[in-house]
Image 1 (tube, rainbow, N blue to C red):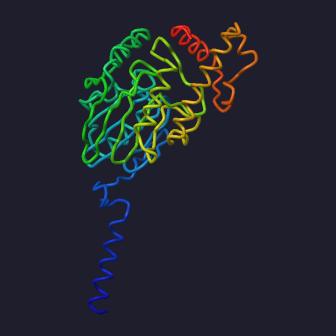
Image 2 (tube, rainbow, N blue to C red):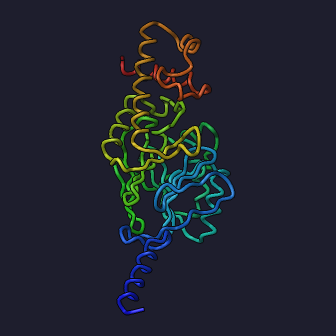
Image 3 (cartoon, helix red, strand yellow):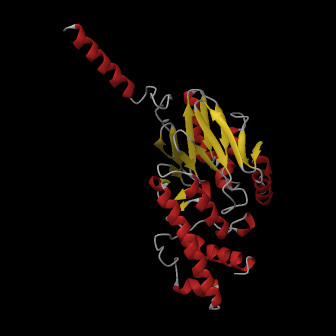
Length: 309
């Protein structure tokens, strides 16, 4: 082999090595890590070093770098345990735990991180909402509250990744926030996004369909068409990640729900009378959650009354 051929083949081998999945990308300058092997739940890679985990409760976001993890939402102590075991097996710290809102299926597992991280992030209203909910359930001693609070935006760098907690507005609760991982271009939407089901809607917690629509509009405008979104809930684990098209569908569903309930109210029909003939919002038969539909209709009704619409 002459020197020219040797140099060409050596260069090509080096180029191939650079493309191998566990080596540093020349564009991102980040190491890609294989996802954890977990003993329970369902873990799937979203993009780069971000994975999503489903078990019992809201979808958990997991971001890993050489120095540790960022976890978004915490489900319940029992359902988050496989994630904790996976973290322990990698012998890395939890750099940040972030909450998208206060509901128990997203924050009850916070207590499991008590000795794992000093940084718990959430919107400024979340700790008090979480405390009030725990007071009702008489489990105040089982709470861990956020200690890094933000009103509109909170930025923190983790390795080469830039993470931003963003307040798009109240929709599902008074304390909704999403978390944007800039380099991987992934956003955890929390419960601003439900897929193929009726969303939880409690006006006492801040649910407001009109505010919710505005929050989705802001997300659609803020993030680009290549962004991947992690959703708080879906009918199947594989549907917990999607695109802007899913955000648009959620917005359209809420708009249709507002129009539908308003029309029934003007016709003088009660929720019970609606349920006798309608089991879903017209045009959205794929969004069915019979156990929640009555509460959802009543919630929209309360919102319309409050806004005098």
